[in-house]
Length: 186
View 1 (spheres, rainbow, N blue to C red):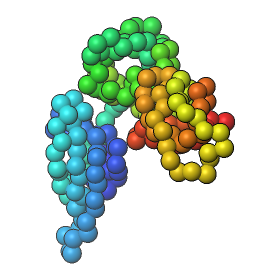
View 2 (cartoon, rainbow, N blue to C red):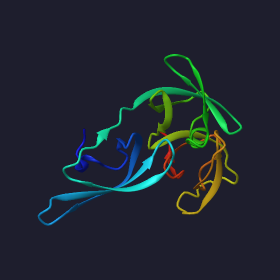
View 3 (spheres, helix red, strand yellow):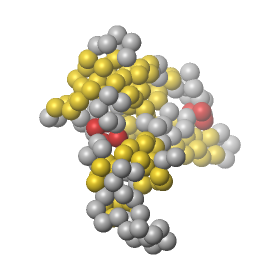
View 4 (cartoon, helix red, strand yellow):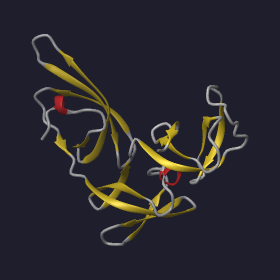
């Protein structure tokens, strides 16, 4: 059991019989009455977002989430297939659950899935991924001082803005939270 003051952004909790992720957290100190914690919670099963205020003396159950390494196999329509690395079971996942999988992972790549009651409820993303540039029109040699950007295409089909000096065949790091270019991979 957690105290409401232990909650932080991205903490997973069980509340009212369902699984929630803390989106926002703010603790307020009351005069003589102790403190309260205002949170914004997202139901990971239904997607509903609620506001909830906890008193300092309440207890919150931490969620029992398993992490499994999955291999991304392919996309087909509105679904994509992943394979459990331990049991070799293939699982179809609705792309509405997390549409970033085909954007940031090449076919055959791996990602950690969050599993709750034997069901995939989401994926744990690294802050950045390394991808190869397959299309970068008009690479200007020596144009590294300019702050202008151009649209490039990565091996997953994702199109992002990158500096002018990036060319086809380069391997770059991309921020998974914002789809922004970070740097060339070393």
